[in-house]
Each structure stands twice: as structure tokens, then as C-alpha cells.
Image (cartoon, rainbow, N blue to C red; front, side):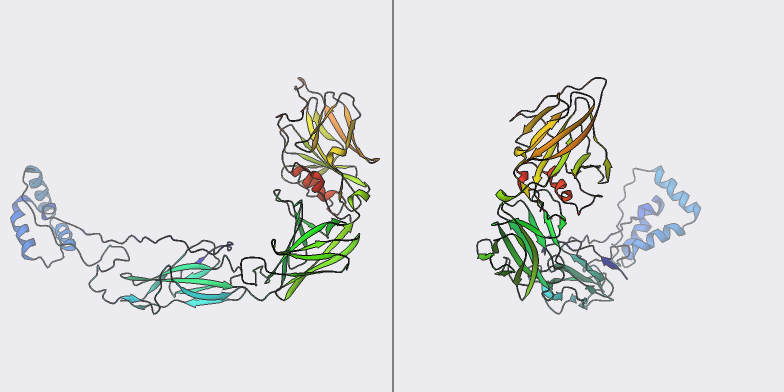
Length: 512
């Protein structure tokens, strides 16, 4: 039994226009009499070949040659070599039509293959037969063709790979338990053959979603600083557009008076949309705080929720007979927020992939492989520079002000400190080898960053970046793994090192 098992499904149903090209042909052996007999026997051999055309010379000639005595073979070889000019024409043996030695499929080559192979239901690539399956339920279909001059086998050719389907080429059974209504829906080209003739049937397997189990939500603020996703398990995932991070957070945190868009789509337990159509359907929203305003935005196909008043509440989005609820924590308006701490990320400009984060005074080094370890100070060499990305946060983990509002000072007067508006970061260059302590301050609250600067034999020249200069900047991601993610600033570090621009919009997490 031949069983073909493809991998995980992809996310799209395809009907490709690829064509199958089967190489079908017959090998015809041509044996001339001169290859087996000498000149003295040429006339007799030719006459025999002409007189008995019914003999299968493809097989008979080699047998006759092999049956000849060694002496006769030697004489024949000698006679042939003695007179190379002899070009007496020989009559070619008839072509072998028995099919021996040919490919397994030779249409119309064997006179015995007289029964055509047919399918009960006609089909084409443009108009295939349709088979329906349901996500999460076992499916099986047996392809049966008629005719042929022997047992039929079935070759399956899906129009896309990694479909998750299995098939048996001896029995013609296609089976599987699909879960994706998109990638598991696939066009098959099924070829039935008896080794002489073949016939093709095209079949489109359409996978329907299972029963609706909940609403999948996509939530975004007006400035697109984050995107929150909530699945059927109720877990809130937070990511930053263009960064590719994915952080689980206990709740969505917003400011008093802020508006979020909630787009909801009813799905089954496998994530397949259960409401027909390509667009997000009309959904409804409610909040446990009656002061919140909820308005349907037909342009963006989402509920726009404006939050009024600090505190916790639950927003519920319903669609297709099911619903999903999301916890939301609303903090005081930005102008009333007080600084409680800082989120700080440090990126060396020495070519290494190490990144450092400072949380509540603890310095953590993050290696390229994602491992994390606490260190007493950030190492640097005399003449090196580092990029510091920091933002002040309130008690709820919401940003207060911008990086440009922060004040940086150093315990070593010779350190050069320069703000880079293009990176929304501060560069610090160390000209002196010794311990350094850089202080970040805002609204009377401060945090320190310890450095250990070691001397070098030949201090590298460095330049202080200026506004608008083309000085290369550090790049990379500060991976926050291996540390306490329940801390108030831990999650924010990854975003600090990941991007440039308005960092005021890049950190927001509820304080544990």
C-alpha cells in the first residue's frame, strides 16, 4: 500500500494551473542480421528474415546469435572484419510490439488493451467534482473508475503541498481529518490506470467550518502603537506592528478618554470563520462600565469603544451567536499621571549582539541566543559608545512623556552625551576608563545605569553623533527571556530595543 502524508496545512485554498506531463513511450529494438552473421551467410540470413516476417526478431535474433558455436562466432567476426567494405543491405527486423521493457503506461501501444477507462462523473480542471468535509471530523472518499484491462491503481496529485491529506494508490481512498477550512481545501488530479491506459478525474475538496465557538478579536488604538489579539481561550496577546513580538498580558491598558477599535469575527474551535463573506461582519459590543461609549464604525468594520473614567472593566464583543470578553484597565489621563519608574534598554555599538535591560535597578544581559543573566555593570571599552533607550512609566506601566523629556547625567565629566531624535535615543561615549554611573531623571524620579569601562592599548577614535548626521546606529532586538515577566517594566524592555521613533507609544503594561 502506498500512503502519502503531507504536512501541516497552509492558509489558502488554491487551484493551480500546473499540468501533468507523463512521459509515455515504447522502446523499439532494431536488430539487423549483419550484427549476428558473417558475409558468407548474409544472403541466407536476409532471405530468412524476409521470408518469416511473423517471427519476433527482437527476441529471436539475439537468441540465434547466442546459440551459435564459438567457432562459428569466430568465423563470423573474422569474415566481417576482413571485408569492411561489404555494405550489403540487410532487412530490419520487425519492431517489437509486445510491450516488453516499456514504461508502465503506453496508451494504445498494446492491441490487447482494448477496454477504455472511464469515470462515472465527468470533470475537468476548471469544473471539478466537489467533495465536502467538515473541520475536525474524519473524512474519507473512495475514487472508483470503470473499465480497463486489469486492476486499476490511482495516482493522486494535489494542486498544493502540505495539505494534510492521505491517500492509498491501490484502493483509491482519500482520507484525513482536516482542521483548516482554507489550507485543507485543495484540488486533486486523480489518475486511474491499468498500466496501459489511463483516465483523469479532478476533485475539489471543500472544508466547511465547524460550529461557532467564540469571537476572535483584533483590538487597536488610534495611533497603532500596539495590536492586541484575543482568541477563544481569552488570553490577551500584545504585539508591536513591524516588530514581530508577541507578549501575553493580563489586560489591555488604556488612558482615560482613549478610544480602541474592537474587530470581532465568529470562529470555530480551529479558528475558521463561521460567518460567510470576506469582510468582518457587523458585531455588537458592551462594557461593564456604563460610562463607556461604543459606536459601530462601518468603514473599519469594528466597534469603537471610548473609555470614560479610571478603573477596571470588561468589554464583550458578540457576533454570529457567540461572544468573547476582554479585561481592560483604564488609568488616569496622561496629564495627571505620575512617574513611578523607567523602562531602560542599552545597546552597545561594538558589533556584538548583546543587549542590556535595567529593571528596578537590576541589570540583565541578553545574549544573542536569548539567554539572560544578571550582571553588576554593563561592560564597555574606552572609546566605545552605547545607545540608551528609555521612557518614564506610571504605576500602570503606561508611558509618561517622551524620551526627549528625560535628563541624562554621568558620574564621569568627560563622558559625551548626545540626544538622537532620529532614533529617539541617547548616545553616550566613554573617553575615560573607570566605573561610570549614568543617571536618568524625570519629574524628580531617577534611575541609574552602571558601566565598567576598561582601557584599551590604542583607544578607538569616536565621534559624537549630531542631529541629522549619518552616523551608523545600533540595531537589534532586546529579547526579554529568562527574567521575571511579572515585573512592572520587564515586558517594556523588548520594545525599547526593537524600534526607533515615538517610544512614548511603545510601552504599556499593567503593573503586577
